[in-house]
Image (tube, rainbow, N blue to C red):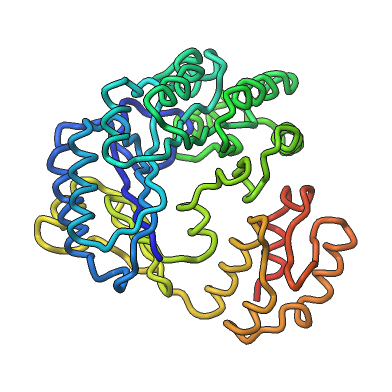
Length: 373
């Protein structure tokens, strides 16, 4: 089984924190969509005959597209690949959820909406330069449910600098009252090339302290657990049966093809990414060239990546898999590190699996790094 990720590189406006690849210039949108369809044809052998189980429209902002372009891409994939779909996800902003679009998406087979809420506070939304307001966020799921959608995710950002945690607690309360079934929550990140990065450099913006952000992560864990949401990956929380299939397959190491500028791909052995430039992407595909750069990975790179990604999940790191696939005795070679993390209460060793405790998830990257070969 495999997945396809489709990167729609357009947005209405630039969010002040966003470092993803996108453009607000949509004058060549039709040409871009046509070239993404052509890229799928050029790369039809990449997944080596795997059946496609999931399709994910990300970005950028896929929901700004006219439904006919989403339909074009789906029909295109249906003619090129063998599909046995369990899930089609579309990332959407609340202000784009018109009845007409929702009905069209539903008729195309899209069955999961990932909603870019970020916050339910209008002042914070304006600071982030989001195009929607809190009322549109609250109405989003109800409007989609009326059309017949049942599977959702809400994206939220925590770590906004504040005097206390009231704003974050209010965001979580409001989100969980909508009972979306799934939350994806990320700490506010200040990237150098974003507006926030420039403001930090000039002293206009001061990020929250690491301790403050950690406290908000722990509040997130407590609120979601109280509502019966399981933390199945560090940033992802779901009620029973509502986990994202597409993203779960990423963390399980299944192959996927990324289409569009900036999209990443993995064929099961090597990773790579398309050029992060819209015009260069279009020109390359027009010339029947794939603007794709392979990331060279040796066996240790793949092992370390497995350690990093598996420890992020609730199912954890399979010690036998490491032994059989990479011929490494993780327990023997990393005994002192594992023992130390167990004593600290950060790492759990059970049924031949290593997994992080709740407190250990705060230190996931450093714990994984200590177990690298």
